[in-house]
Image (cartoon, rainbow, N blue to C red; front, top):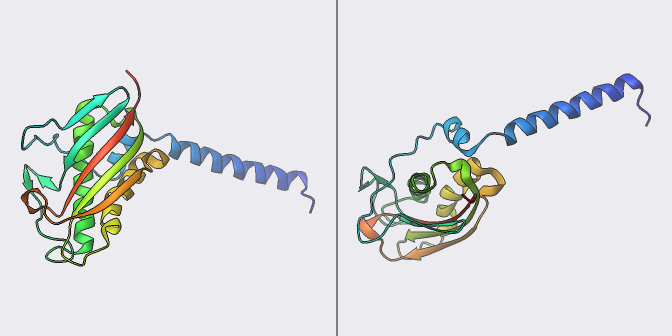
Length: 181
């Protein structure tokens, strides 16, 4: 198939349009994506025991476990697969990752400094027989990819716990690589 000059120009224009759209979308920062998603990070959660919310060593930030807390109190409680549905637990995981991002921002100043989300450990307060911990963890993982794009893809463990603090359905730990300085 041979294209005439006009058809080639149309193809080039379409390709340039797609490339500029992709560049514009890729150029949005994590802070801008948060805003576009309508997410306002709460103040960084205060520790409830003898620990700190974040520890930075080099370019890695290790975040303490966070749950679906609002104003220091659990937004929901119970065992997943019992009193808490899988869908509600995924929402709890999303809330927990929002709290983790608040702690991260407090530590590094801006989420635009995130180079990569490295690892999540998602603890699920599971009722006997509940085995869909990865589906619950997707509530957090999906949001991280929405905010950080490819840099939000991470290694992950999603494990069952027979109890969690305050009877929360989910607790999440996170390791993040940030830009130096």
